Amino acid sequence: DQKKSSQLVVVCGNNQQAKQALEGKSWGSGVSVHVKGFVENMDEWMRASDVLVTKAGPGTIAEASICGLPCLMFSYLPGQEAGNIPYVEEAGFGKYSGQPDNIPYVE
Image (cartoon, rainbow, N blue to C red; front, side, top):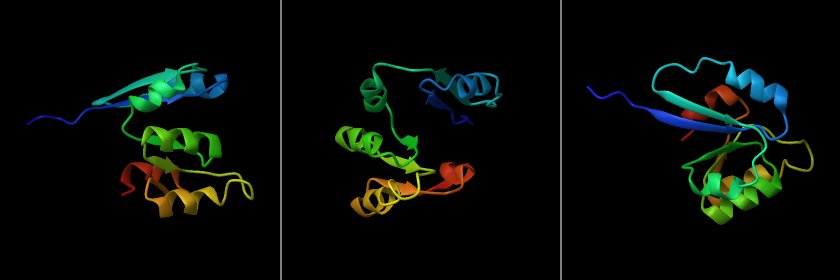
């Protein structure tokens, strides 16, 4: 019986509080988690990924679409980012769940 394993890379940018909180979290067996701060090679991380979990920011969505990277979105800024969700879903390269805990189950 072979257990499933997965790797998760979390890029926190300049949010040191989030980085420290995530570094101190226990992720359980079968999950390898790498927490990064600000990175200058986000394009390389995106090209190495199978999926991107993000808020519905237009810059990130554009970069992901260029890389052919599906997006799972969990939040948006009301008004300016709200229209990005139907755009991504209707274009077929992402889904939205307002409940971040549901992201692993989005199909």
